[in-house]
Image (cartoon, rainbow, N blue to C red; front, side):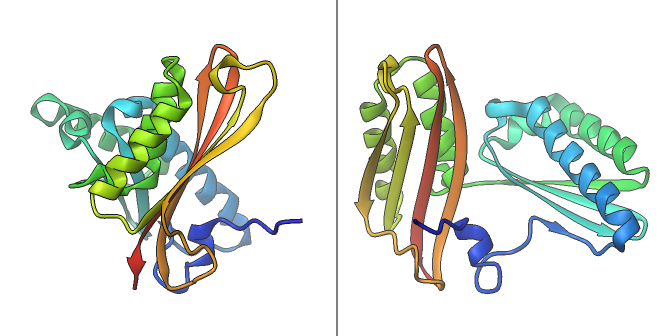
Length: 208
């Protein structure tokens, strides 16, 4: 049997970092975790795929929570005249019960971030586009953007077929066992008429 491990958690000691930074004792851990999950869900529901959100980093200090949003479309998250960012800040403060700071960082090359590539493929699949065309164009765009390699897997009732199957597209090299390799990974579900199609993306950006 293949022993599958998330490529990001596998590299936490080397070149990846935790998405949430805080320390809690046994009694508070569940509460802190629930607050973080509620914050991530709030941001995803509020902005959704329009905002092209790659990741949300949360850092706590005793009386301040810093939420950093990495997005491909900062304008959508900030909103007209900064209203979107202010509303997010107010809602996050309600969740945590302390002051919050919201930082919005714009991504220059969305093609090099696995979550944004996976969301783009999922969006095309839900619009009934051919899966082969979607994954081939996505992998070509990522390689043009300067990646060393990309691997895309889609699984489910592809193109509305009767039986589900798994297909993959690989370009360049993706060394999954090399710990020092900088690999970004994401898994997204695409909702189609025939059912859910899973999309997994690995992007290799070189060695650190």
